[in-house]
Amino acid sequence: MLFSAAMNYMFGIFIGASETDKGKKLAVVGGVVVNLILLGVLKYTGFVVQNVNSIFGLSIPVPQITLPLGISFFTFQTMSYTIDVYRGDAKGITNIVDFACYVSLFPQLVAGPIVRFQEVANQMRERVISVEKFARGIAFFILGMAQKILLANPCGQMADASFDHAGRGALEAWRGLSAYSLQIFFDFAGYSNMAIGLGLMLGFVFPRNFNAPYRSASITEFWRRWHISLSTWLRDYLYIPLGGNRKGKHRTYLNLFLVMFFGGLWHGASWTFVAWGSF
Figure 1 (cartoon, rainbow, N blue to C red):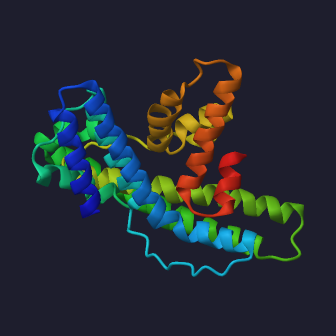
Figure 2: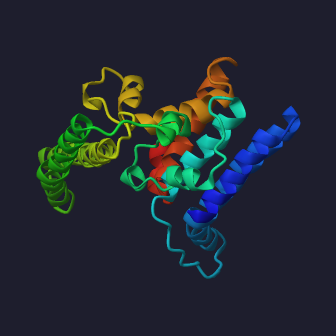
């Protein structure tokens, strides 16, 4: 994390100091490439080696890499910093301590929401810490912990019991699926609310990450309501730069597929995530 913070801080300095568009573009491309290499090597090396061994019948030793805590989240956040500075959406930080604070901001480091630099840039310099905001933070934290402990965990036990039951019928299978859908929502929404609550206690206002996703009338609406910080990040930093829906129907569907494919792979290094994202 310290390496990532120092590296992206330097790329931000290069972008701000460059007097030509070419120089700025080289700096932002360099930042994105190095970030992706860092994430790829640490998170996906073992997965790639295992599959190469399986496909080609090799016996390459699988490296045992301990995944740094929160790397998926702080990598996306640091990438948003260099891209926002390049686009002019945010002003680069000259104090490396301030930037390291942004990268390592502990309330949402492990489980989100993904906080873009432009969303907290002004708050890093000046924010209001009040009794009212602290009280709201406590309320959010209590709500999130209740969602996690009182709802997600019991639903998870019900789902596990259904999935582990060898002779389950259709009713049992649907009960397990329903319980799991509630578990994953209350678990993730709970963590997000706890992070938002901790942020408020420290004077930071983080973006909302869930908005009643199971009330959605379509899959499109669902992705506007579920893990909002990731969905909007992928839209703004991947889908739109790929061309979005501006280059015809076939290119639009290709862009949508690529975004969901990489979104699935971002969640974890396994074929189940690849299959889910592709589907």
